[in-house]
Length: 475
Image 1 (cartoon, one colour):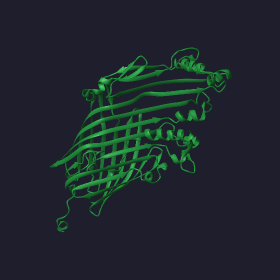
Image 2 (cartoon, rainbow, N blue to C red):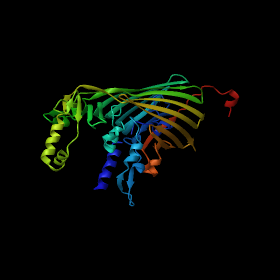
Image 3 (tube, rainbow, N blue to C red):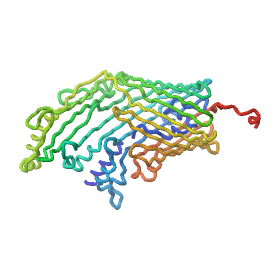
Image 4 (tube, rainbow, N blue to C red):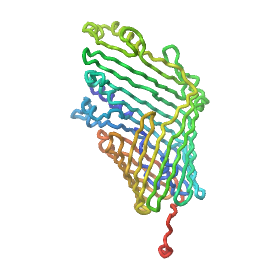
């Protein structure tokens, strides 16, 4: 039973575990999807067509602190048997602990060039999930309230949940304004599948140093909408079966977003780039639910907006543990202090999770490039930064290689590699953002991979900013 319990904990961590992160294909210049995170990036082909459902697939799981080799103890046969809570707490930061997951799969995509303009079309399935929390969410149940004694030492619990699932249809335009400046835009039509968000989820628990009385303040506000209409009636949540069978319902939740980018070439060797991604919203017309909760005056435990708990007597504890009727009565009375107000919602306009990118590159020569790349993700009032250093090279005419190192909050061992095989007329690529996970999965807090197969034609080189002298051109 203990093995099963610990295994379930690991599964929960893994399944809820990524942020939209810097991926290997962002640095592979000969990859047709090099411009996914900056629509202004130069596409070095006259055109391409992605193989349906095989052209671009990207999935990742990550956390900012989970290291299973440090927090899980295994028996001699390799089965998990216990969790090292002391090590777990040592890996937490005060406020910014993250579990994240992302899926980005292209169903159909193609692009073509007309003079200085490159057009691209793509339809993708996107899932972006974030879960951020403060360390006291785990510290309180592990250490108990005696670690939070005094008016200036509350257990400060906060959490932020966000999930976006939608279908995306995009039309990208990349323009070579002149030899130095490229600009790009990618407007996108969105069809919402599901959205979960928290506007507020926090609690503060104080312990009196004299009599150890606990005072609790808390507020919660959570919204859930999806293409399957939900109805709250009485005290139960129902799925509108008629809405599920109606194809029109799935098309009601339309939205719009846009990716913007610019790349400025300082000279033939150096350049900078900026991008703003997923700036937009989805208008949810199908019914959803909003759950809000705060403390209520339900009896003697309530005082001036707070819940005051003086503890239980030995007799009350015995009844709670041994008498089912007494236990149910106690829990029922307790629930009246923390009522959940549920209301049906529709017509909500909910913003996407927006990302900001900035880069500097140095082109050693035509085949070798070094890049410094920063990406930040805006999640409500929180900001999730990442920074990468990368190398990209073209070897033996057919091999496109990439290696990069990425730093994320509380995560510094992320070494990614990518390989692209440029064999006319195909481009086959695969990569991972953390090669450590391939050899030591329990020592990695980021697991990801990308792969794709594309049919492409024609090569288009970037124009030289400074023309070579005539005598040097006669080779």
